[in-house]
Image: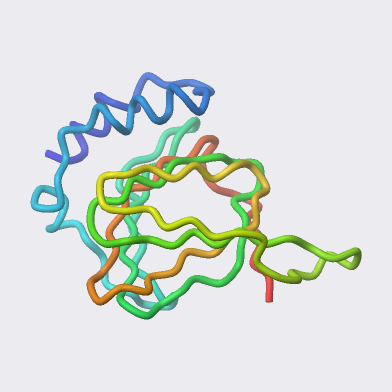
Length: 153
């Protein structure tokens, strides 16, 4: 069922703009209840991650971030994307680099609540954080599909 919904929303997209990608994400008739059978448990990362759908132009990923967990600072290479928060409150922390290319400090952080969307620009260095008491569940849409991502210490 979920694959058919994702195919309908994203299958015909080729090189979508940020507005087109968000509109496709917003068109999904998905709730936490309908997505819950697909929610992954964390394994090698502090969060669970499952690719739900991919074409050569888009990739849709389901993320679950348990309470008191945070990803490493990272970028999405040349991809941009939207995070649609289905449950919990996600803090998106954006970092800057020093002259040697090391992550220096957070520049800003934005908390995104259930039902809201967060845009991640190409090359933006960020981390996702859950400071709440319940898991954060999000559906993330990227274009092009993720590659050349870099983690920072």
